[in-house]
Every structure is written in structure tokens, then in C-alpha cells.
Length: 112
Image (cartoon, rainbow, N blue to C red; front, side):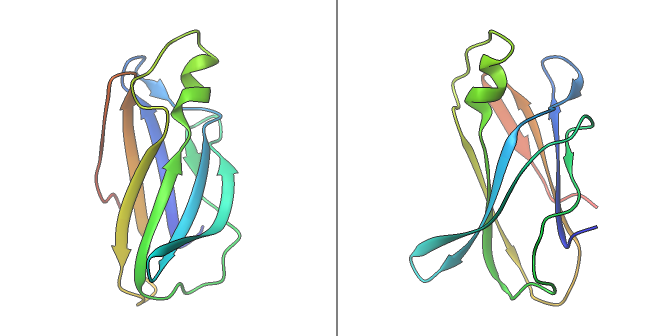
């Protein structure tokens, strides 16, 4: 399991958000650098990024490409992409960043 993981749940269907492309970035000064890209599995999860670990302290973000996900279900969405920024301390802890998603809203939190 990677130091950063995610899990997408589609609250409009009550099921995992499968096949959602997610990119992981780190902020360097005022710019973002892409670290990894993957797609959620059948359970809506990305448990393993190809990353050097432990990750350095800093601000990271996950970009979820939700337009493609909803388009595959013939559903329009208000949020074509969702960026979730978070900060890690650089101490090797695990950071789980879930996304609860529907076509017209979302929420996130630090999971375990």
C-alpha cells in the first residue's frame, strides 16, 4: 500500500466510483508537478501509486476526472474535474483521501 491512497464512492448510486482517472501532484513553490496517474479499480480505490517513499513534507493534490466518469453513464456533471489539496508532514504516515461524489456535489475528508 502506498503512503497516499484514495477511495471514490458515488453517492448518487451508492456504489464505488470505478474507472475514474486520478492524478497525484506535489506543489513546488507556485507550480504543481505531476507525480503519478492511475485509475480507480472496481472498488473505487487506488491503493498503490508508483512513488518514492517516504514522501517529503509538503502540499499535494489529487485531481479526479469526473466528467469522463459521468459521461460513461450518460450523466452530466457540474464538476468536470475535482482537485483535492492536502498537506502531509513528511513523517511517513499513511494519508487516505476519500472522495464522496455525485453529479452536483462532493465532499472529502482525511480517512484512515
